[in-house]
Image (cartoon, rainbow, N blue to C red; front, side):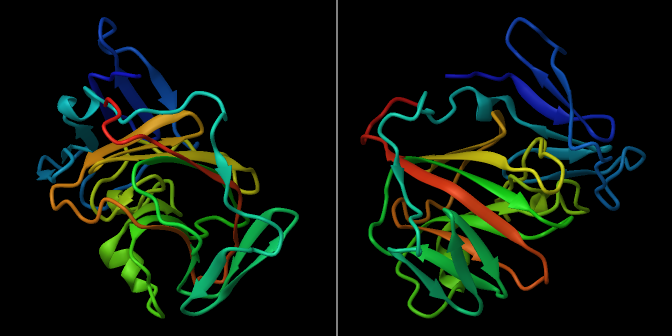
Length: 260
């Protein structure tokens, strides 16, 4: 289990991580782009406070208590169940657009819609997968813990939670890739160049969430409104004329009461 004392954004395009005993250490390049936040640049002295932290003077700082206890990860691949099979068996489209599956790769077309796993709902889990954007800013998302959506893809938005896939450097921090949208932005978005695969890990335990992108913890959050703690898994297809592909989506259930 990893424990971080604080994570914040400093100079554009760089993230800083303090680890216990190593204050100020750990500087990593983020996505090769300068982060931009509209009016919330370094020269702006105003601070914006949210449930997840403080954004001030071009920096987004997450409070230390969020990193005291991360939801558990699951080393290795033992116990994971693949969710995407050839032909998309066990999945259904809700709303506009569709997904096609070829060679284990699911590609979204049109939208805004929801491709969701109908075979089972999940409570506490580690969800892993990979995505690839074929164009800059191609939009998608990973939804968790939403009820049966019927014919309305907005059920996943309004009653579940989404890990955002799209822009590594948006004007609004909550729209950054790795955000638990729209509630808690990530500390950074360490994504690979367009056309390359990225891996993610989303852990849900009780009402606690963590997101890892390409092996880095970028987001932890506790849902203060305590939305449903169980539900379905889904993937968003978005009508921006761009393409996002998904593969190797797999899940491992965590036992109730697993230590945080």
